[in-house]
Amino acid sequence: MKKLNNTYIQMKNIKLIIPVLASALILVQSCKQPDLSVETSIEVPVGVIEASNSSIEEFINTTGTVFPVKEVSLSSEMAGEYNLQNNPSTGKPYVLGDLVSKDKPVIKLEDEEYVNNLRVRSKEVDLEISKQEYEKQKSLYEKGGVTLRDLKNAEINLINTEYDIEGSRINIAKMSLKAPFTGVIADLPYFTPGTKVIANTMMVKLIDYSQLYLETNLPEKYYSNVDKGFKVYITSYTSPNDTLIGEITQISPSIDPDARTFKCFVNVDNVDKKILPGMFVKADMVINSSENAIVIPKDIIVSRNRNRTVFVVERGVAKQRRITTGLESIDRVEVLSGLEEGESIVSKGFETLRHDSKVRVLR
Image 1 (cartoon, rainbow, N blue to C red):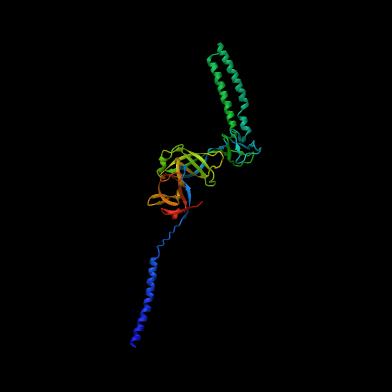
Image 2: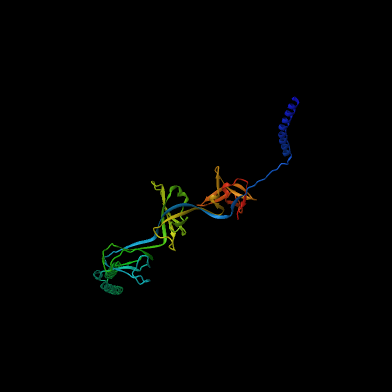
C-alpha cells in the first residue's frame, strides 16, 4: 500500500513538470530565432512651390473719400427768365450726366428790359465816333493844329467809351451760364422754363472727375515714411477689381495735437471713370519696394521661439529652414537669407511636419 502511494505522488509530480518543460522549450526555441526588424516609414503628402525672384512693395494702408479735382457750382449773377439750353449732341435740353464743352452755355437768363438799359448799340456808335475824333485830334496835333491837352482829352474819351461798352458786354454775358471747363452735369435743379429766377440762385453744378483727389489723415508715426511723389494704389470697396494709380502731392508739415495725425493729399488718375466722386476707397501707399528678391507667401511661414522657418524638400525629406525676412505686403514677404532660388518650399501640408519628415510631393 505504501508503495502505491509513492508511485502516485511521482506521477503527479511528472504532470506538473511537463508544462514547465514545454514552456521552457518554447522559450529556448524562440530565443534561437533570428532577430526580425520591421522598418516602417510614413510619407506625408505635401504641396510645394519654387523659390523665385519677384518684386514686392511695402504699404501703409488708409481709407478716405475721393473728390473731383475740378468742380464748380454756377449761380445766377443777374435776375432773369430761366431758359435751359439744348445739348448739341442730343438736340434735347441738358440733363444730369451730360457732357458740356468749355465755354458752352448751359442756361441763359433773359431780361429784355435790362438788356435795353445797357444801351449796347448806342455805345457801339459812341465808340466809333470816339475813335474818329481821336484820330482827327492826333492828325491835327502832328501838324500843330491842336494842343497836347486836346489830344489827351480825345484819348481819355475814347478809353472811357471802350470801358463803358465793355462793361455792358460783361453784364450781358452774366445772363448766360457757361461751362468754365469741359465737364459733366452733376446737379441741375429744376425750374419751369420761362420762370423768373433771382440773382445768387444755384443753377448748375459741373465736375470733371478724370482726375480725383483723396484727403486722408495718417498716424504721426508714419510721417518719416511718406514723401511727395510716392505711388498709391486706390481701390473702391464697391468695385474691388478696379485699382487705380495715385500719387502723393501734398503733405501737411504739422501734426494734429488731438488726433495725433497729419494730413496727406493724393491725386488719382481716373481717365476711364472707374471710380466716382464721393466713393469711399482704400488707399495703399507704397513706402518701400524691392525689384529682385525671393518672395514667398506669408502664410507658409512657421513662427517658433521667435524664429521664422519654412520647410524645404530635399530628396524626399522635409528640412526645416530658418529664414530672415525683409519687406512685407498684405500676403507676401521678402526673404533676405535662408533660401536659394529654385528650392522647393512646402506650401501645403507643412502643419504636421517635423525636421527630416519623409514627404511625398503632390503633383
